[in-house]
Length: 465
Image (tube, rainbow, N blue to C red; front, side):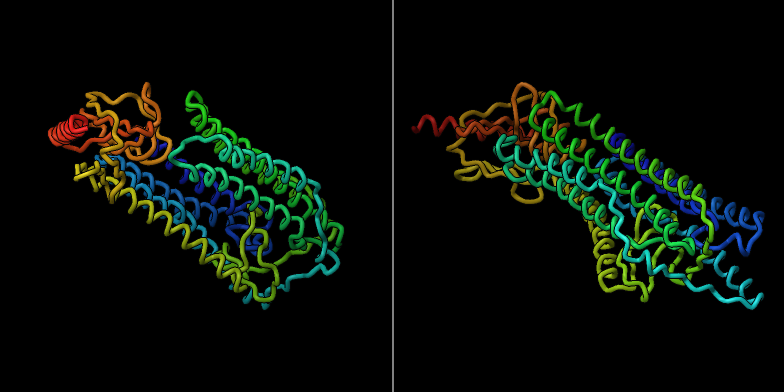
């Protein structure tokens, strides 16, 4: 469990690391988010700034890797997973500190040189002719086709019952994937109505330059939609047919790798095409004052809510707009609340232990709260197992010392589990509704004692009847 989760989380820092390096110098005449650097600095000076930035970035990488290595020595997997979730927060943000520091140093020096030469920051040109241009790529229709294909698992999840005990969770899962595709369709529409990039005094050159970016991003989003829809179908098939379990593992890995590959490929393609684009009358646009740390856009004079990032790696939000502030706040709350919330939830899952009780008319299994309350009158058979057959989690937790939720158990079928897999005694309960449960406590003696009490009560009930 620890190895699998570690392998899933570790690539995050390398993806962010290489993304930040690419962002530092991804366009001509830009470095660390500062514009017009070639106009004010020599190549040797820029190389020194870039070297200093990479050195600081590498220090952060080493620190995060050392933290990751230290975390791996935590013995309890639920503590390990909780700390690993918290480790994600610095992993997501620490690499942007060298970028922000580099932007501040470079932009400050640029302003100093401007002041020495008696120059002022140049105004941002506005191409009014191209301002209202709509960039029809013709790809949205293919995006819609892929989106509706991704809706098929949502429909099938109501027609083909995957698990009679969980009637709504699977439609929600497949529906969430479908909503992701809808958001990508929204982005495609936004790109086709995006702000025209002003890089020339000629309107047609501005439109062509922007059209390169719009087309490549919409092609990438179309690929995302189709891949997500195919993955949604794989999810449905793997939950429906137990033999396709490894197809889910392989499909998830391939899905993530292909998405990452297509994203990097699109970024490189946009950069290469735009760098080769011949501009007859270029503008040297200087708008550093509208970028906080070179990453956050703040411009009260711009009516656009979303604009392209300076490194051309996607879009960002105009923080000067009220709606932009709200969106930033929502995203921030989601990131921190989900990360910290997951860490607390995992920690509680591990701290609380399974507890079994036989009350007057029911068998109660509790964990953090009461999880199962089975009327004794509904129990058809109870068996004590000394080994737990091979299991596969559908929904729930599968930690070293806790199995909780809906599982598929070899030679038994779908079962509800609440147990410690290291305790070599398992109470198998079958009800008159053909529902199956497997329980135990951390204590072997307590588990056997609960089993004997339950068996005696069942025998007494059958004798009385």
